[in-house]
Amino acid sequence: MKELICIVCPKGCCLHVDESNDYAVTGNGCARGAMYGRTELTNPTRVVTSTVCVSGAELPRCPVKTNRAVPKEKVFKVMECIASVRAQAPITVGQILVKDICHTGADLVATRATSDFSSRV
Image 1: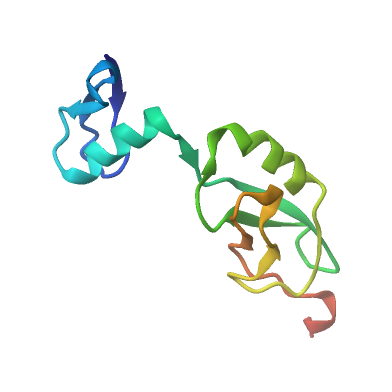
Image 2: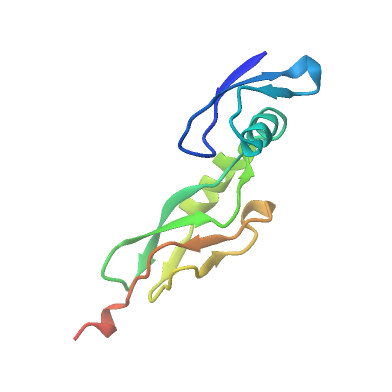
């Protein structure tokens, strides 16, 4: 029996997941909590957030995230890929900087707009 704190909503329910009983979940306050408990033990995933270097912008870095959760075992590989990304300003919010990063099916997208130096007046 594994014990987890649910992070799906602000309630933070204490989940008990019984691995020997087909990952039965107790302690959840909603159906989303049951799904989270099962998934966290069978196929844990994470949305990866970081920053990338930007050339020609007022700010040297731009915050990014994956547009969907990636398998937890691939998070460090995704971070290695992100470390090598060099973007060129201007960048818009939601712009895809890397498509299908590390063959995870997730795209790396910008979460902040950056303008280039030439747009400054």
